[in-house]
Length: 89
Image (cartoon, rainbow, N blue to C red):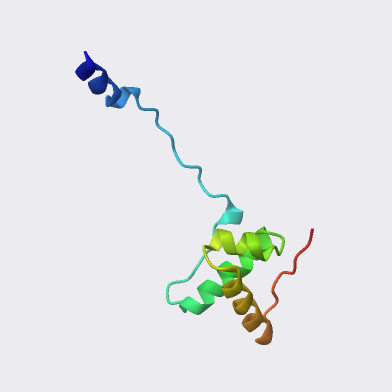
């Protein structure tokens, strides 16, 4: 009987079909082929900061990088004259 249960459990008809949510327009970052990786990274960081209201800790967590690395990149962008969102509560 345990074989019957395991066979039933593996049956595709019993497995619910769960589709991952499609990203909203705000979560899609359009990129052109040939864009330098540094520009892609910068745009991803800036857009993540916008989404996180400038919260660097939350943005770093979403990006999978240490906060210190994110802070150093932001400092570099600012020195290059690129506007980076500041924290807003």
